[in-house]
Amino acid sequence: MPAASRLKQPLDELCRELNWAARVEQDAIQFPARYRDPADIELVGLFAACMAYGRVDLFGPWISWVLERMGDSPARFVESFDLEKHARLFAGFRYRFNRERDVLAFCLAARKLLVRHGSLEAFFLEGYSPAHAHVGFALEHFSQGFLDQDLSPIFPRRRLSYGYKHWFPRPSTGGACKRLHLYLRWMIRREAPDFGIWRGVPPSALLMPVDTHIENMARSIGLTRRRSRNWRMVEEITSGLRRLDPADPVKYDFALCHKRMSGQCLNRRDTRVCAPCRLQPVCIHWRGRGAPPRGRSRSRAAGAAGPARAGAAPPPAHAGARRPATRPRPPAPPRTPARRWRRRHRRPSPPPVPAHRPEPARRAHHGIATIEALPRHALVTEGEVVLHRVGGVEPSQPAGDLLDHAPVA
Image (tube, rainbow, N blue to C red; front, side, top):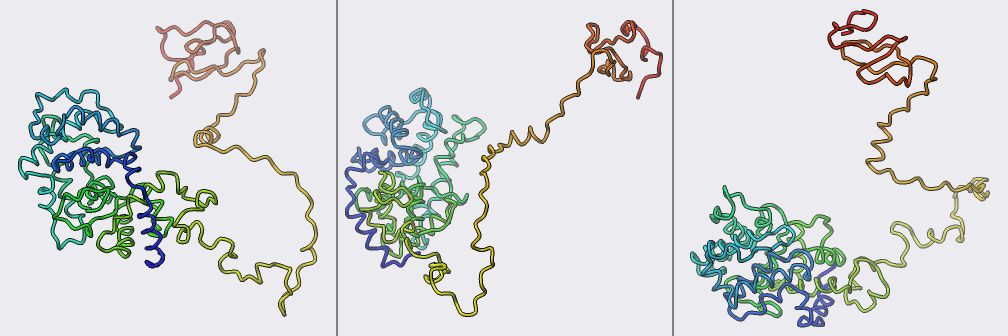
């Protein structure tokens, strides 16, 4: 991991130079930003964060579609939500894992929690303690609260749908919980573009919302070397950023995420795209370019051009001989699993049978031995054989072959 002194300056410059107002329209935060009432902001923010998987241009129209049906104040709509009255209000909702019943369950569970606690902030603070190192324990309580509500009128036998459970992941399962960390960033951070309407939790307790963009950016600047996007990666990245700013470690999230979303970082070395990047001095894709491979000195990298070392063994006589040119073999086509299976289980083709010689006929009955029959005769079928002008086996005859042989076991 790069030293904090080397990493802090380019990251701070990246945050200062980012025009976040122009990037808000490309982020899910645009939906709660439409409202001014804190009750609407926290409720719409939660629904928008739950839906924020995939591209914004894909899930964004569905969020707007739901908010239009909730009216001017989504908070008042949820507080007065009636399942029988609004059962068909969200008919036709369909985005990846989620269907209309998931939206109904969200409204019903949120209404029950708002009636009991008064606000989503009060419900979250019920599971938070200043003694906690971060918000992970409170987030477990928050997600479990939505999963434990009685939603049997929507989900029979209280079997929650996969889409609804996908909206409320729990840290105890080991996942990154990116969308809920994103929601907490919106609610708790005091600086733009976030809202900072939850004052009971300090920004220092937040954890980084790690998605595919943050994962690749963090790996490029050396904040993590993990390959699995899970809770441990979230803690590792947040720990590295906390060294730069202990009071607000997730302030770099918006700038890092949108740098890659906008195409300014390709997760590889590109002279044209990387030229104006502030993170180039700490990027692993530009580290050590032009230097000899590690473990070899510059004198040895020069090869035979330099003088030979004292006591070195002379090269073999054929070392400088030119090898005969060989014709390159064409590359073999890749063997797919289905192709390998067919090759392994391929049955050999039957040998050709002369037309004037007898060949084994297929067994007509499991208790009758296979006998010889004339090949390709018009009367040779699966249940009938012909041998030297002898007719077929009648069903009424006892078990045996045409020569009165005993049945074969």
